[in-house]
Amino acid sequence: MPGLIAGHALSIGVVEYLDRLNFAFTADRGVIGDLPALAGYVAESFEELLGAQ
Image 1 (cartoon, helix red, strand yellow):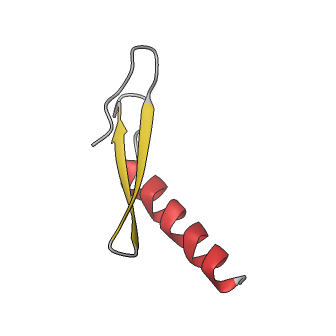
Image 2 (cartoon, rainbow, N blue to C red):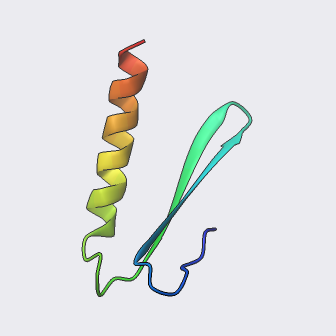
């Protein structure tokens, strides 16, 4: 799980394990108000990249 560094509002971790790519998000909710939507956009974009192969 990625931690937040002072002065940063968002941290994203990416880990590949057992042929799966996993994302972890940590955010300051006072700055990044809709983290679930952001995570959804990343998932959608990754699916688009997979389809472009």
